[in-house]
Length: 268
Image (cartoon, helix red, strand yellow):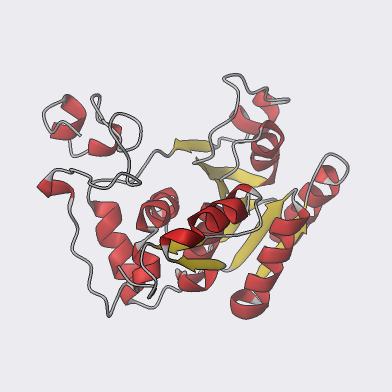
């Protein structure tokens, strides 16, 4: 971030007009050396942040930013899209005391991963539902029926057009949708915009990046308070010779979260 534009001066550096991103505007972290401004460095305590969790705090920050402006205690929440960041968002909502959490995804693999997480952490408060073209209507009806009209907060993590439409339909009147997912196309068609959005009085929040640095502070507080995201790491690889194998697992969508250690011992 530039630190000088109007958004930076308003403590909204996450939407800086002159943002430069490592890996896009300059060489990324796969380079042998990376230069970052000293003000961007956040100290991590190993007794609070395990090494493998520290490796993906950037992604966890996306999940925390998506929910951090909402009071989750006693809330009914839907997570639409159970990829790695969606999984983290569900974990944060559960840790923060959400009364009910609905996890929706079209992928059978994602549903299996969500079911494993539910069995380990959220039995009794988490419902996992596979949605899609043929089941979207029945899934929407189930969520509405069980919540008395819809959830308080929808975390839209996928960016898929069908998922965005379903997010509008499962939100209660006066509810909120926080959108982190980025559509693959510029245009997204909303089937019933007036009925599903305007006449329901919904609030739509666009989420980008992490708030600097309140998201980081909140994230570290959550980890210090016992938030478990280490269990979301499904694959770990050590040593440069295993790099290709790790990337293959990532590209094949076999893994929920992959952590790679450059040396043989599994430490930096």
